[in-house]
Length: 436
Image (tube, rainbow, N blue to C red):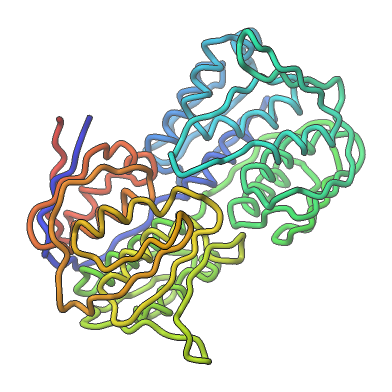
C-alpha cells in the first residue's frame, strides 16, 4: 500500500492543465465494443480505473494500440466470446466499477452478457436497477445463476420502446443508450441523465453512425441502426479535476491558472465556489484564481444560511461536495452541505474534525461547516482515503494544514487523478509518495 506525506503550508503558484474526463473515458472506451472497425479516442487520462478497463478490453480480445500517452485506438473485431462468459472475466469485472458499462454494448452486439456486482468507491449503495430495468424494457431476459452468483442477460433481438427511468443515473443512461443503438425501431428515454459525459457519448455514437437526438436534454430519442463504423473522438477536460484545482487554489494558492477547462461544460461548478466567496477570472478558456486572503460565504436573499446540495445535471455534481466542504473550513461564515445521492460520502469529515475543522455532521447526508476565516489553521494528521473524492479533499486539507500529514490508501486517489503529486509539486507543493 502506498501513502502520501504532505508538508503543509506551502503556497501553490503557476499553471496547471486538467486531465481528460475519467467518467467520459469509461463510457466512450466501452462504446468501442459496438463496432468491428477502429475507433480512435484522444485525451484519455492515465489513471488507474481507466487503465484497468483498457487492460480488461485487451484481455477479451480488443486490439488496443497506444498512439501516445493519452491517445489510443481500439478495434473490437475478434472478441473471445467464451472468455466473456467465464468466471475469471466476471471476477475481474466485479473488481472494477467501470466494467458495468460493457453490458450494454455486449448485449446490443452479441445478445448476451454476464454481470456481477461491480466494485468501486465505498460511498454507499449504488444500485444497478436502472440499468436492468432499461435492458428489460428493450426486451432482454435475466437469469440469476445462484451457483456463480451472477446475472446472465440475453436477448435474440432488442426492440425499441418508450421508457421512463426511475432515476437519472449517468451510467444507467449510458448503458441503455449503447444497448438501444442496435434495437429494432425507436427508443425514447425520458428522465435520462444529460451530463456532458452523456452528451459526449452520444456525439461519438452519432459519428459512428447511430441516430440519437435530444442530446443535452433529459429526453433522448434513438432510432436503431444495423451497424456502426469507426470514428475519432476527443475527451473533454475533467470537470471534477477542474473543481478540485479551484478548491486547492482557494485554500493554498498564490495565483493559479487552470488552463483549457472547457468552461461551457463546467455548468454550475464555478458558481458553487463563488457562493463560498472564491474569486476567479475567466480568460479565454482558462480560469485564473488569485490568492484568496479571505473569502466570505454568501447567504440567500432572505438572509438564511447558504446551502449547497448535489443534484442531477445541470445541478451540482456530488463528486465535488467533498472539495467544497474542505474549502468552506477556511471561509468566513457558515454553510450547510446536503449530500442527497450517497449516504456514506460525508463520513470522511471525522478526519477534518480531528484536524480542527468546525463541522457538525447532522446525519449521513448533511453537515454544517463553520469557517475559520483563516484565523486558525488545520492541524496535520494521519488519514486514510476512503474514496477518490474524499481522498483529494483530504489532500487539499493536508496542503493547508500546519505540519506534516500522511494519507494512506492513495490508490483511491490514483483511480481518478493522474500524477497528482508530481503536478502539484510543480506548483510548489511538498508531497512525497512512500510505500508502507
